[in-house]
Length: 356
Image (tube, rainbow, N blue to C red; front, side, top):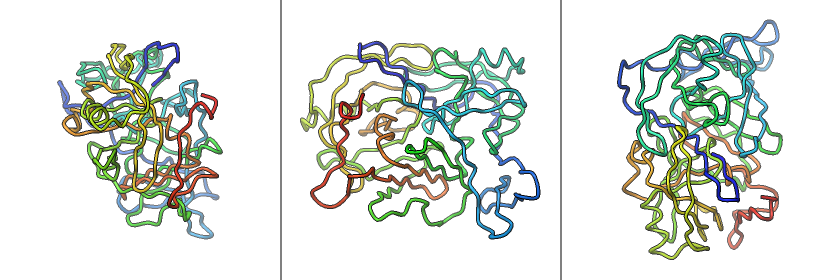
């Protein structure tokens, strides 16, 4: 999602797949591409029958697939991928998107075969969009084959495509904002978190449609649902959350009108404010700026009736590291230097102080 302080539209690259209009093709599970011998050898992974991972032959330790990324102008993570051996092309990593998406212009350029028409839920509403058949998409050593990708205009996506949770859901993803790298680890149930510092914040989640939803969050004592959304530049709440903030007078600033731009190009009216305090499992988040909209995306997940928040990159990129563990349904936040979870200390999100 892109945001301009001159109150130009906010572009939200958030896709939730609803039932298909035609056909029911589902993407194949992502698999790690076999690495060249003799330095790396594939091994089966428990919990991911079609997946392969890389194991150090001398120690037996799992080796992560490391993908560097750039924070683009909208503070979203852009990574290089190849499609059918061609590329690289810049895709955004979007943990709020159920499906991997391709730009129509790129699909036409690669002469990909058209697929079925799909009905998708976006931030603006329900839309029928074309799709294309992708033989193979590869990001470093992670590979997904034989799937159908919904297609939108590259101008509205802001990139050549989106990497959705269909490529990541059987794995653990470690995002290191200090090094600007993303490491992908094989799935192992009940495995110790990668981030295990004393002051790390571990939040358990439930899985809905491939997305991890945090329920250990609250505003003024009222529980809210939170979705970690790396595809959104800024954080977005539903109308139930807007009502909660207004009733509890939890806003730090007055509500002002703004506009969200859906990935379809549709403009969606919204209201924007800064929330004084959001508490996530003992972590206090101060003065987070949030836009509120009547978004179809929340309804698609059954989150339109109770307060819910899409936590965007404006918040996530202020942590040193974030670990998203899909198989074990947890997210671990590594506090930046100088922040602590000890009583009386808060992690304040001061965007002005960070050069924003």
